Image (cartoon, rainbow, N blue to C red; front, side):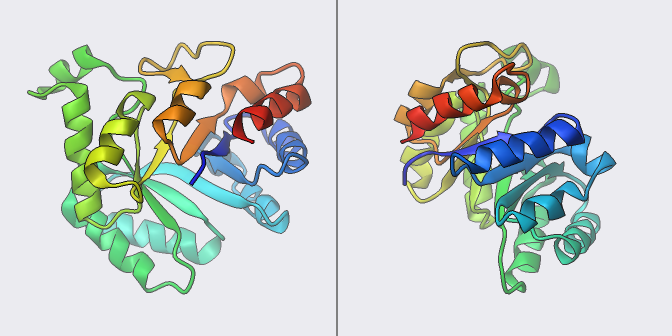
Length: 228
């Protein structure tokens, strides 16, 4: 499977719609909706669905199993969702409860389990009390996610190869922290799009480089050249 682009729409509703319409011209059909748009304009999900495109709902669910299961059920009943994110740190029971819930659906969305946010680095894990380095921690969480029957994980570019080697090629990786021509100050564990593709990432998340671009069409064309 070659890398596919996921466009993060962490912007206002009007620009988001502009980006969606532009991206479809290049056959980019997966759009990540986070708290910014979901909390203010959840109808953007229906807008994307009507365009025959896919929604990755990035709310990073994290709570006790019964609470998260109810929340996920309500959302999946109301909206057409291609995939969504949960935190591996919610634990095995939470992940399994969500898997059980989605298994009862006729159209099963993909479950991506967040490992360690790409905005965090080694010193942050030490503050949390983790005894292993980031790569080992991410790998442990990825193995937990796979054992709990998640479809894949969210990880930084640095961990893609390791996860693929240990968890198998079919275990999906959704990768933010991808740089094109600029740097994102929020991302501490990042790498270039060329290297992320080379590492074998299944889904590459790009947002800021698109929605902050003065020439959105040019940026999308640039990305299309990478992913051909």
